[in-house]
Length: 230
Image (cartoon, rainbow, N blue to C red; front, side, top):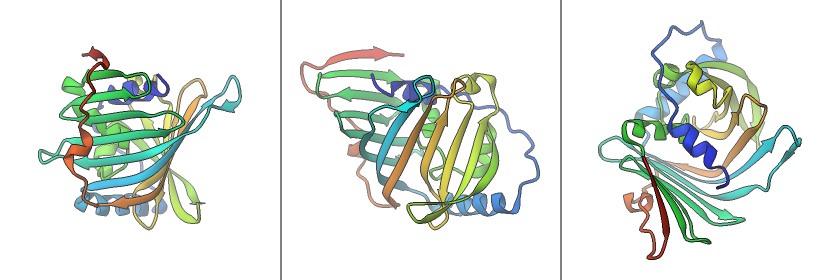
């Protein structure tokens, strides 16, 4: 299934111990302070998204996908996520109650993954959304790159490098474009060690809007071919 490597990789990223951070640059201080402030009142995030995969051997992008992205916190504090690809073909990923469900309506096939002890890793699919810099630093070193405007919005660009070798085997680095006005990422680049990467861009983003918890649940139609994984 297209892009499912990101799902399996991100939900299995291990959390490393807390390390001392090098003295930050003033710009990094500003970015992390803004993210910390947003995180204290964060409840939900809703946006349109586009994503495309770059393959270094071919030096080209695949067909872009687009749809809607939802992220929120359940009453118990756990992550709730819905990524609904609408074009070019429908695919819905939801994470709720420690279970990830990936459904392809066109072929009536689904994968259901019990995240078990890795249920908290669902947050890596929404890296930087409402997470405190302190929590991010448990798993990544954070480096300030530069300021850049994305669709006219000034952004801090931060490079996150996994601390553990296991995580670095999936991603050599994750780049976040943190929107200065809102303190949330509006673009994410997931870089693989072989030079391939996935670029995800958010638009029309809204923070702390009401999202029913039912949006994060999928009732699979009768006749769906379901593959269950642990």
